[in-house]
Amino acid sequence: MIRTSHKVRKYHPDTRECYFSNEKYLRYFKQYTPSNCRLECSTNLTEHLHQDLRIWIFQYIFVFKNRRM
Image (cartoon, rainbow, N blue to C red; front, side, top):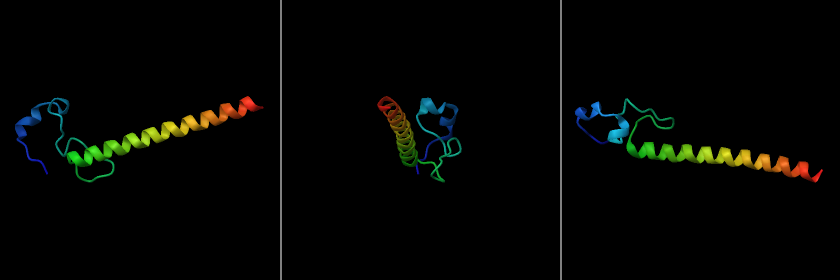
């Protein structure tokens, strides 16, 4: 757990480059921590890339099958 002054709250999260636990909710973790956030961001990116790859493969197969006919 990281402790910081509540005076920092007046700054936007983009400026301070962090969130307080009640400002950011994670899908896979009950508690917000910087390490949980990084892991969840990596997981989300992996899911996104996997989805894009799956769509690309299906499109490729569809086009390839139509060309052979």
